[in-house]
Amino acid sequence: MERLNNVLVVDDDPALLEQAEAILSPQYGVSLASSGEQALHFLEKGNRPDLILLDILMPGMDGYETLAAIRNLEGCGHIPVVYVTSLTGPEAEVKGLTSGAADFLTKPFVPQVLLTRVALRLRREYALNEERLSALPAALTERERQVLRLLARGRSNEEISRELHYSYGYVKQLVSRVLGKLGVRSRKELSQFFY
Image 1 (tube, rainbow, N blue to C red):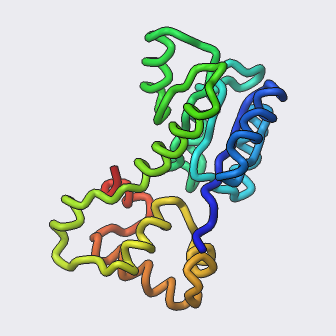
Image 2 (image 1 turned 90 degrees about the vertical axis):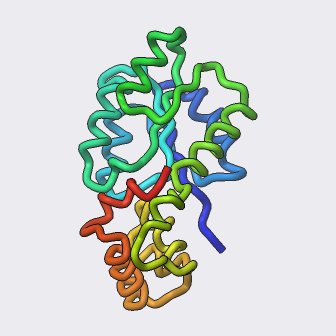
């Protein structure tokens, strides 16, 4: 069974954190952080959510500073971040999107809209670029595609081994084979194969 996608919610408002957890937890693993600093500490400990919902207006590090710091953390540059903020208007949305956010959602949010945006964002982040993959000299097997999707989500070899119920040694071989077929040297270069 594939593990639940994990969402990190970062907001200084305890009521919003509670609401987001109640809405998201039936479908996703949810982690909460009440500040940008707390979110960074969570990520620095090796936690890798599949999506981050991030407030902009917070004391200390605001959302823009937090997002910039996340992008500089090893292994976190690929994690999609959605701003969830009380800021409104086209200027705020443009600034949010041009600062590197994958999406922008205003508060107060409608629960079903939040769930729909999260689901669409997660699906979009890991959709294979079939045109690029079809141009490869050697086609990926279905098993290799499965590994590629997990690599794109930032999974370690150990996590892939557990999720797919393969031995660690076999996963290492699969990962090496996938990277070789794609012609890339590291996992950081995989984003070109996804939409």
